[in-house]
Figure 1 (cartoon, helix red, strand yellow):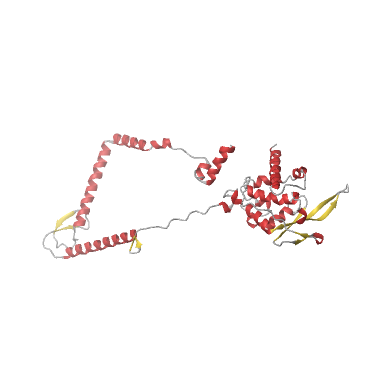
Figure 2 (spheres, helix red, strand yellow; figure 1 turned 90 degrees about the vertical axis):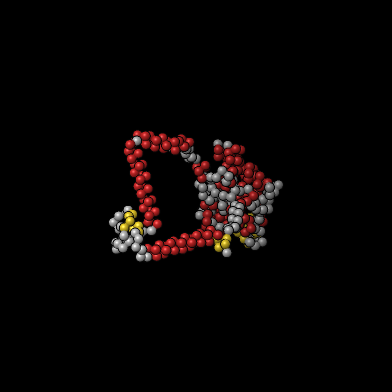
Length: 349
């Protein structure tokens, strides 16, 4: 049932496409119905109407053009058992302008069923290696393509005339090409993809031609280094003086500060930085000792308060939602593909 509907739609599209070129046909409705391979092509090229339009025009001109004898000639004939003569091979002259235009409109079209390029199936080889000549050759060679009813020798030429069989002269077929960027999306037509806007030039703050943050950090580092070196120089100079009065020293085997004789050989001069360090260490030791003593005496209260605080901080997990829809995960809500999908779902279900 579905194949019949698709075949009917394809024939209607094929008929309407041919009608856009000329009003009279040299074939009947039965000829249209006999072109069964179009129902397969429409499923492959349906993503890009321009590509399918150009592809149909190739066979429309061959089948129904009243002036087909200008670019089409029979090469070989066969006779059946009922003594009826049938054509077994034809030469079809096609202009390079049309051939390359049709190829360019279809080179990026994706096959909906496989996700690969449509030319992977229609050209008989990888789409990246396909050319207009290879494509036409595969569509006309009966030994390579079993769908071809008889051999069609496509003659792709840039000349105004080409020699035909039996001394005839053929005029390459030319038809108006529909650009893919008129009806196809960016995914199926590279000409439809708009280039990303260039990034605005940076307007960073500079000092003397250099980045301001670099200059400020360099000056800050240099100032700190100079002050640090000067402080140590002054400290060592003060310690080197021979002062008979007592000084604060730090014994090598003790972290405590004591007042001893300045003449002791094992003493090391103790300045303000050492005194501050000793006081800070004593303060930390006092605080952590008090905190440990408090936790040991109020074990239950500390555990309960910790559990309550952790419970309050993890309440937000109840509002956590796991997103599993691949459309939501990998597609931006404002992207072109998402907009087209929403339009399709709204209008076609």
